[in-house]
Image (cartoon, rainbow, N blue to C red; front, side):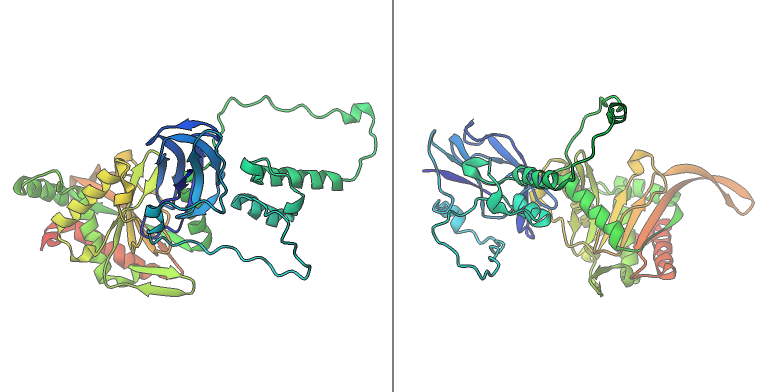
Length: 416
């Protein structure tokens, strides 16, 4: 009996996932545990393994299709076996899982009588969306997908035929005028479709810049005393694999304390409401080869410096070890991002909506600083605060940044 490849739940807030790439094609033999299809949620991209050995006998979701969790992406069975998606049973273990499933689309009311003898059209979600946008009648489209399924490419081809038929016939032109202009030589560059995590990031960042009023303030912090204090703290503290007391840990603690003092920065702007929080859920951006994720340290305001250090280090290891399903990647009220290890100074971080602020940390450099008439070499660190001007004005944002700076320049206060 055919076995379903199910869209899994990869996070607490996940309700649907996107098909990134099929690693096997219909008719290909597969072994149990072999990667079959790559999928992604808002934060995670992973490969699904075959639940049983057999043949990939059907593909229900095309690339870029958005599928509710618990629904079938495809089927594995015996060679030559056919499956009816309407009657296929969900495996018992899957049926017992409580997974949120998007409601099935309701048919639009029609005044015309409907014949129950007509076969139901098999249409991918992406094809249905395109047909609606392009005003293409799906009943006129011939499906080329598995079991006659109408794909997005089928709808696009039907749309092209309609447009071509509607084009006016151009008058004949002299031969010399009909010669097309020379085209540029084909480029040797490689073209790659934007999918998975990169697509999610691009959409979120574009939306952030389009729907918020972002402004960036910058300042420089003298972290000479902080670096000395951090070294002494590391020597005094019993170092282990979970706690290292890095500069990032001290920055996180300085930001948390500042958010408790300037609560307007610890807010979310959603719709036409601003929600301000007493507790701090701090997002700490982690760069990966394929993109960026933001693990969240929940209730960070109630944690000690060592506890914060432990959580940040654990989250970074899990993210870089592709164990994102073990992390909480949503629910932050403020975010820190750093390009310090890349040698970047000031930059303009983009807000992670619906948050109203994000702090960018640049690389520490040695600079000459005047103390009265005396010039000394000091370790200086650039900070860039981007805030949503819809929710916060410049003066309170500047006051918050000044408090972060003061906290970092008096590091002993961070452990009191």
